[in-house]
Length: 232
Ligand code: ADE
View 1 (cartoon, rainbow, N blue to C red):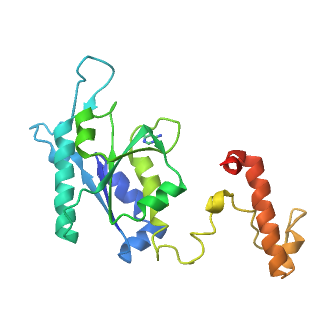
View 2 (cartoon, rainbow, N blue to C red; view 1 turned 90 degrees about the vertical axis):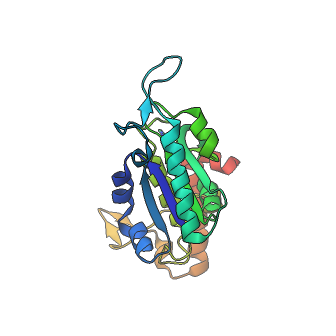
């Protein structure tokens, strides 16, 4: 899978995703992540990418032209790499988008190419969105300084669903939110810490009982922390 991120801060994306599991997946060529600097595609002689909003208002807006030209460059790259001239899905990350969730991650994981558009300043010229964006997604009801962290969050969540990215074949499935239940509590050595013992059943070797315990604990945890998931 090929990710593209349209951003004014390509270093942030590259440094943020170059390590650990995602870094290893890139080395194995299970996925690629290309951060494309929008500033490289401005025609302005001072390399400006923002301007004042018509009608007034606070702050600056990202202008349409650099965004559309960045998008065109990405489409050319996709065509060169895969031969595809189809329009890729372009996710504009914004607090007013649809809330990101696990099912959306699964859906995006099926794309061969996926583009993220990260805004900065106070927003972006609406015509840029009309030209390039296909999806509008938020990672939660709070406002961040830019779209880079949300894009990285989504790329991480999508990448771990790509076959081969996680070592353990099962672990993408046995995750919080699989089947709308949260993960049960887990324990490793020592058997006792500060007077707190690992639940007896986990030491029993009784597979069926252990599975039943995990299921029950998942349910209890979901009831306690995310009752809304049970209602869905
Ligand atoms: N940009 C700024 N805040 C954001 C959020 N919560 N989700 C997605 N993009 C954002």
